[in-house]
Image (cartoon, rainbow, N blue to C red):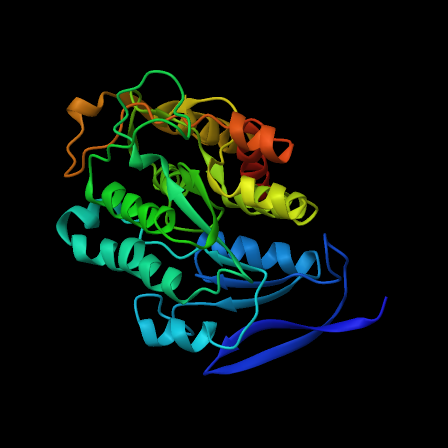
Length: 325
């Protein structure tokens, strides 16, 4: 196969190119992807994945394109043809969203409305990521895509508004709801727990909130697997497939068990000591209401795209192994 030119990123308004091998995916020799939020933990995972698979993509960080600024979005989307536009940008500081809700709504709500208004519905498919926090957590069995939403905090409300903009639009889209997102380096739950253990702090973790941890590499690789299947669909099959899907690993846990699994895996090797204690959410001071049970059912996405989904422990083990590197 002949080398083709791939778009790596945009800096200061200029496109930076690199040579790559053209790969045949679906109905054409190359797919071309636009990625918003490339510097976030999920965005970085997508960048690694696309480079590994020699896929044409344009990676945009907040410095290149601020999704809250309509002029930035218009500059990027005008006169550019992308097969898929992936939005990995999000405001995810749940606690701060209660204090400064405007910050959350600008990114999770208004920005989505602006992006949707500028997408060419005949040429691009928009991929957006949402959250288990669109639910109130009162259901004791896993949430399906058909369950009624009822967010109980500002973060969840802002994400639900973003979903509604897509549902009310005429563009082709996928909304992938996920939960308890983490990576190996970012400011997220397992990394905070590991840092507390390193500092020999006594750790208290809630054991009565249930959900499913999802590593960013699971989310990005599963998204790409779905898009590969989508590319091979007929036009009718594609139109029927658009909509909302829960994208989550198998098996549920609680925050305490998740933390203990991570720490046991890391520190059993080094024999370092740490102290971790389970507490109830009613005894834990917080300015945020969080769903008690926000387990997401992944049956719909498995049936539609026939993808393989592991237990959350699979990626937790890979996370643990990274501490040996």
